[in-house]
Length: 151
Image 1 (cartoon, rainbow, N blue to C red):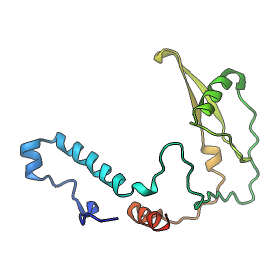
Image 2 (tube, one colour):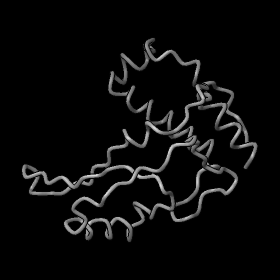
Image 3 (cartoon, one colour):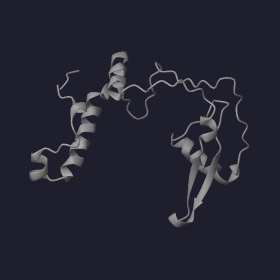
Image 4 (cartoon, one colour):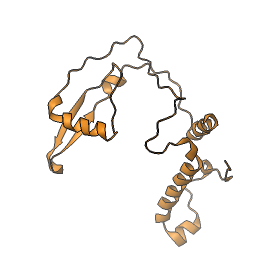
């Protein structure tokens, strides 16, 4: 993959180019940000999968829960939104969980928005369980470079 040679991480977003300000106006900055992210996706396109393809089996997700037991949660109002869950499953938005760990969820009716319904998931109980390893996340460019090398 050929590198353009321009390092976008060194761009000072607070410093405005006179050409941008005088000729194109401040609205051009939004366009430049869009083009910046578009160029990132073009550059790293080989590591992104087209819709419908399975993710790479090279990365295995592992959540260290220590010696904590799974949280037992009763199904709240399951009959009222089983239809909505089935719709989300069919459309591929959600998938069935194979883990014994779960989080509470609720079905919220919002009357101001033409009585639409929303599935709300509260992860605070689930997030309290895993062991945190206190290591920093890698920089995005290092992460993408590593992914590209392992692709």
